[in-house]
Length: 180
Image (cartoon, rainbow, N blue to C red; front, side, top):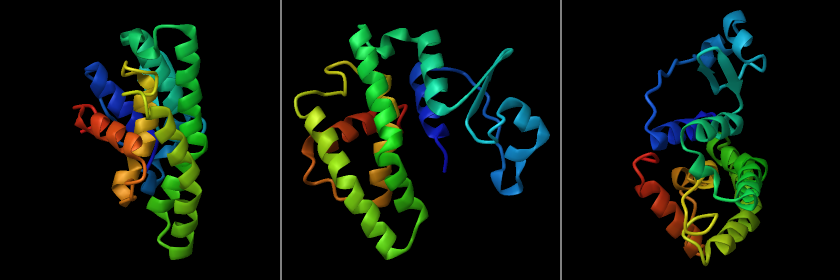
């Protein structure tokens, strides 16, 4: 369970040929001296591109998009700002509750996390009501960053019936090869 998934989705969308180096966190490989030289936080993901090293999934995705397909960043500075807004929103607000649903089997904790998600589902459903994608009719990095969080709803079996725009958007994303 890590945020590396959004980086994998983007790399697939960009058609990048990359080497994935497994890090066995159960055996503490992420805390090894060798790995800590790459990411002093001892977390994944971490990207090594030649001599350049970058960690944090959102930063990695911004870097890869700017380098390989900048049009996915939006066509204006305002769209780029909205891309950042939605990306940070996803990891700050719905992601912790969705991770809680995956990681915590306690019924009370599950009920609390589901209740906490409701306003975020409503917000996202409203934003998508008149748009195919978060920034309008153009698929962007915002859809990957936010979609990689919201697709956890599918994993945990969330009932999305009262969020038709959000559900349709998730279905559009899940139909893309990069999300499959």
